[in-house]
Image 1: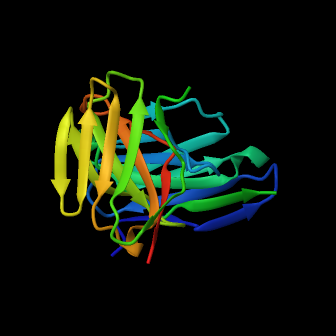
Image 2: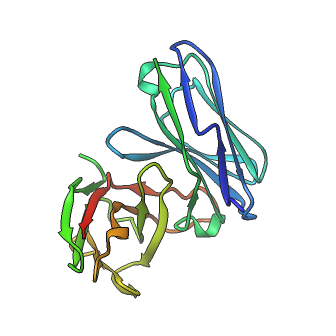
Length: 113
Length: 114
């Protein structure tokens, strides 16, 4: 049983398109995160939701919009994709009071051409 | 300059050797120090975490934190080829009810040769 799952695993699209990535966790956690990992493996937080409420919003272009329909799901919608958006996007989850122990999904490899 | 610095490697060692990894940081507010392991094309997985300064041991893994020097280390004893992965250090300030975030280093790639 996958703890944190993401779809799709791979996404290849052209500049200017809009795309979404979905994340689901079955760990009963109340906090979920989106991270971006660039080609140099640097992992940087983008957003965090606690009980469907946005609590962390790092300096991310407003073309990126997260949405949490419930505690177990966190989606990421990206408008007007740019070449620089190419990266691996990871979803993670944790208990709010155990944020040091985050469980990561397998990642979505986004390539913008 | 990044808040957390980590040598990207690769660090190549023979099987059975001790692997020594480290990170330096600049933010004195960090209190939780984590090591994550990431296999190729997979998500990171938590190996160990340490609160404040000191040592922590878990099997073949030992984590050390020296807050006075803003320096953390991870040692892997009796390294195995299955330890070949990228190791990411991560840090966090005091855990709040919500709004916690981890700041990651760039990762060190480790290769353990049979």
